Length: 154
Length: 115
Image 1: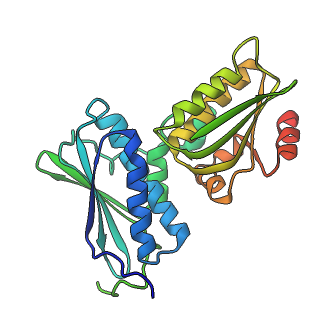
Image 2: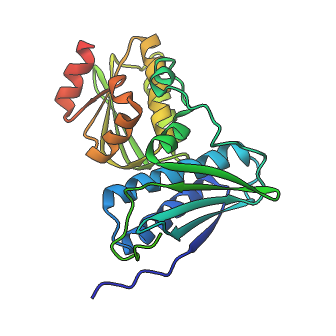
Image 3: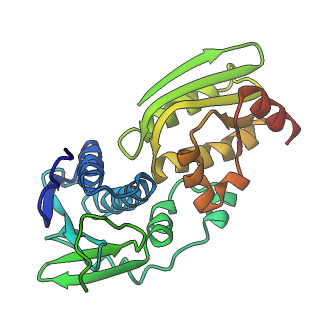
């Protein structure tokens, strides 16, 4: 008998420390695996959320190891999932408006950074940032991430 | 992540394993810095990625940045043995066209020296 997946939405609060990124990945991987999402798709979404959290930890809160952000996994639309990263204390980081650089150009310049947001944009089909009070919620979806368990609802 | 360095007459071989993310990329960066240090660097740096389980952009960034240092030092850099899923991360960014990535050590060595 297959284990019953945990009811959605699910949420994980994580401190802005690089060592906690593994917890974020495990949270996403284990949740989606319980919902029988294809392993390739689990990998891509996990990477995108890791990149988003890495960006917040590295650029938005580099000296605030106690500050926490929240990763949420919600059901829908359809048999898909919506992923949210909620930062209660954002400083206007406009991810949706970010001009995505050409990674090949970054590579030719031997740049160490800039690839994370490129990956997010290339891996996810939907990306939006919503201001919420002093914070923000970044909402991501990847169409191919579907679960046979989730009801097919609009 | 784990990094193990082996010094051979014409090659510095790095064996890396585990998760290469923002929390561990500095470990790889230091190992590559050491591999390129004047007085001990070899003509070729090979990175055995067969133990690598995960990679995110900070890890990729280390390889690309150190590729520039290799070019300045006249050292060749090549990666081999990585899983298909990790190679796909490089491919999404198009960086598999910039850095030598091969299946086997033998192929990586030949491709790096021919580049």
